[in-house]
Length: 427
Image 1 (cartoon, helix red, strand yellow):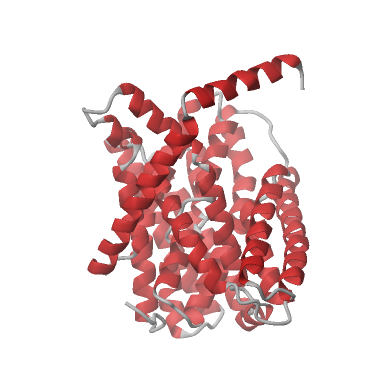
Image 2 (image 1 turned 60 degrees about the horizontal axis):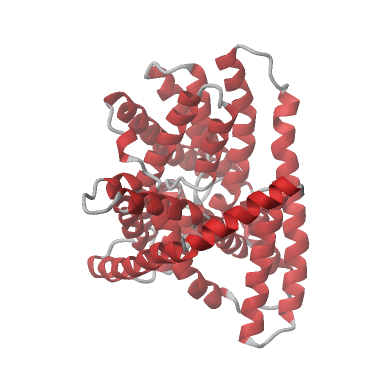
């Protein structure tokens, strides 16, 4: 580290202290947590999924809405924007816990029992979402490369909202297990699919030679492989340590440390934090010779983390960027085509896999939410298409807008599915 860099860091530290930046971030978080508490009371009273309330609250606290409040000064509004960006680390932490939770629900016995059924469902719901979105976007008159980009992103499913609804209503049964397994595997499929189509879209847009087919799939395969290896290593060590612990404090600190270290290492080595922590959770479930007794602790710890996560997801929406008719036509075309692809593809996969009737009917309804990995892929488009920022901005706005809608529609759809299937224990 050279002298100039050290000087800049010192100036930055002085600026952070001078303007009490950390305190301003705490102000924002304290407001979010307090309002989240009010949302919980309201959601329970009106029997709506709590996550829906969090996302709506986030939209009301978005930058565009705050900017329209007349009694706030320009400085206050700018500090609010800065604070939102500064606490974005909560998103990574929440995704780490969500991925761990999914992995801890997947047992080798369960996957063997699901057999070819889950393979059919995952492959068909992902490819159907890709295919229908691609065709629908092209039919709308958009360029083929836009269809490829949106289609590739459409295959991803965000686990957070779905997992939270299943936990909230204490859902348990074949449908619930299948949904949990699918949302855990789905992002790996989406990552591979997107990594194949994005170079093709890039070449079509710029008219240049780009990566070969082998090159385009090697990167995601390497990323997934090393994420799995890291997750298995950390998960095996973690469950070995925790297996010999009975003290609650030591037990909680052990698995929380395991999750955070897995998250940090995955980010440092540019691996997938979701897949890494999912494999850590999977290792806890399958390597341990006894029940580790961490489920209740995990559920309790993650309540405030998930609350802030979903509020932050809602704040990402930019209402000023989604008002034109052409944008709304594209966004709702994407949204509708993706949902039809998820439900239709999952149902066909369930039929081919000879799944129980309730899985054929309802499994696709648990696959609507889309944030997390999908938004990360949209960020990737912005970076890779930096020389034409309009492309990245369009993809990113479509994803933010539709992700916010799916975070509202998805929990209701998941609730409908588990209640219709008779797997929900509480209202």
